[in-house]
Length: 208
Image 1 (cartoon, rainbow, N blue to C red):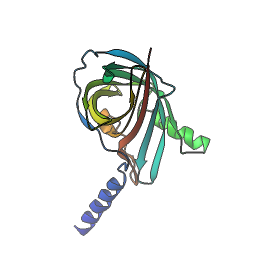
Image 2 (tube, helix red, strand yellow):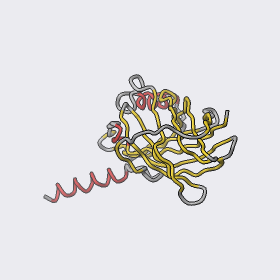
Image 3 (cartoon, rainbow, N blue to C red):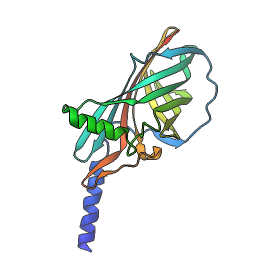
Image 4 (spheres, helix red, strand yellow):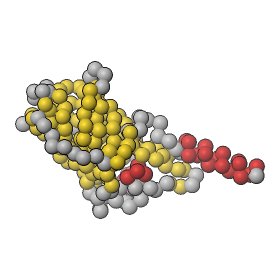
């Protein structure tokens, strides 16, 4: 009995250490209806925008970037009212591993069926379903996130940097639980991978 309790305690400790220390998990629920966006269209500057990711495990963490391939936001009275974005899953890179061989192995693993299966699902998508004001300079944003052909609705807070007749710029920092999108690989028994992935998004869009 003592041995069983000790084993349970060690397993609990390993799982606890594997949680991602960054960000707050976005509220997640079933996919919601996407209404037609109202307002003026602003094209996302994919070169000027940035998505950073961090994944943690017991022995450490890895971080990198992934790119938007296209996107549009809509502003009504200079306020965000809607939008949709496509992410190029093949663009994922790791920034913390300096050894080219090890770096390539990690990125290849992230692209494999264990994680994002980019051969089958080369893009991810986010469609805004709701925007409400938060405290000054912030917005509550909800939207359908599709990964691996699985869609859930997530909600998070975004900081508005600029919202004008010519430009929209915002930042957000949140976690998602990857297993809710069927990214189920657990890692090694003694080096478990966190369920949470942290994303830091810097979005820039310009009126055309």
